[in-house]
Length: 190
Image 1 (cartoon, rainbow, N blue to C red):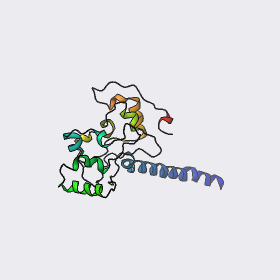
Image 2: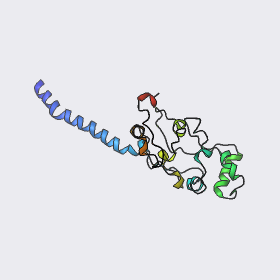
Image 3: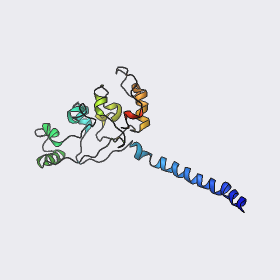
């Protein structure tokens, strides 16, 4: 009786169980991939803001609005007062600027939706990258050509390690050649 049960477990139950486990893993991995990678994520923002106009046509430097990138690990989301440096005079009658002005006058933060996310358990410093002169577009894509910003690169561990091992692959051709960067665990997992 024991041999028959053992044969049944080995021939039927074990293969079926393994198939279900691997099948569930494979389906979960591929179905959840866009959410993990974030590529293509393009949320609707509370104020329609065109990076194509501001960073592209007007050539406003990223750091004018994202003020903390040289001093902090975070890029900071612009406050209404930064926008109002220009829009207290320029295009005040436009619907989106009227919305902006209301946030400013009420001293409320604009509820921008975050687009680019590094997992909470990973440490990333904008400062370390910006002070090396690495262009924002290396990770964030050509935002100066985007009316609505979307995530164009993956922010997974594999993507970061690939860039650290071969940094020149994402940098502009005329950028000075860089050496490889840290790839040990403590560089990101602190």
